[in-house]
Length: 321
Image (cartoon, rainbow, N blue to C red; front, side, top):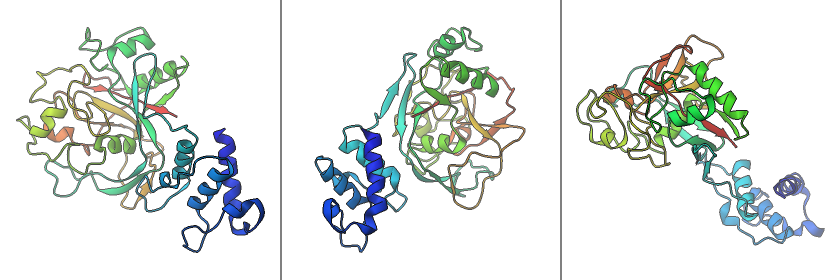
């Protein structure tokens, strides 16, 4: 049904400049802006299809200053009673939250305590929504797919899996995808930081940083495991507060592999960046249980070779809709 609706919408849009008479009479410049746009096309589609008109669902949801096809598709899904679920959980107990597309400032401002010069701020647009795993992949989830547990801190089913390289994470993804549980991948670096910030522009998702080393930082202490509170080991996932988008442990516990090779940040605005096409090191993000507070900020950028296996590196996944 949604495919038919989308085809109909496209037909309305293509015919909009010519729609004056006949069955197209519902397609007109309803808002008086001198053109027939998506709002009018949606209204006409709803009327033609016998749906209850809901023009209010067509809005600039991603904050880019315009109403585009992504918003139109969302509006159609709402109208047809087919809104995408906000959360998806597979049979392995891996839960994914829907992260809305949008625009944000990636990197850190010059006055952020503990920042590094490589964190050049630049505007990034994530053009489409995606599903981000709410926790790091756990030892139990790894064992269910790979029938082994490489973790140094083994014997803790709900702790993040670690001592896994970037290539190991790719092997896990391939095996998981072959199980019929959906399609998965690592997040890009931009997707990772966007999800970590969850709409915030501060060092941590819940506020500013006040302590850069291993002393008490009140904001980080409630959201993540770091050298002040971890007891020098990993902890079960989802024990600290989540961010505004329901994601846990984006600050601390273990570093997380991203898909990208490491490269310098651009100075100009970019959309859906994926990093360089090649390189020596892969991006890791988020900080770990043995890190200082400054290394658990949303903007922190670190790197390691794709074959590196350390007890402080794990990963989380993105589910492809």
